Amino acid sequence: MRVFADTKLCTGAGLCVIAAAEVFDQRDGDGLVALLRPEPPAEAQAAVRQAALFCPTRAIRLEEP
Image (tube, rainbow, N blue to C red; front, side, top):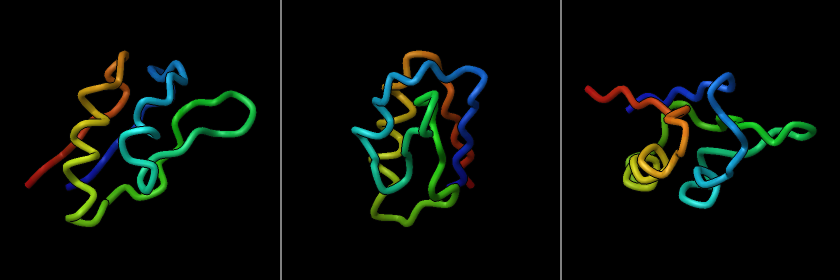
């Protein structure tokens, strides 16, 4: 799995961080998404899928093989 986060779409809701804190964070200053692990380990992938579903602006995109 490969994760992409679009800061132009992000509004800083933080739901991705709540769902998968090992993969997402929020930037200092503006609170927009910061991608910590663009290729998350297998044990985090279910949480990353949830984060993508929860994102109110669809700023998170997943690419799966």
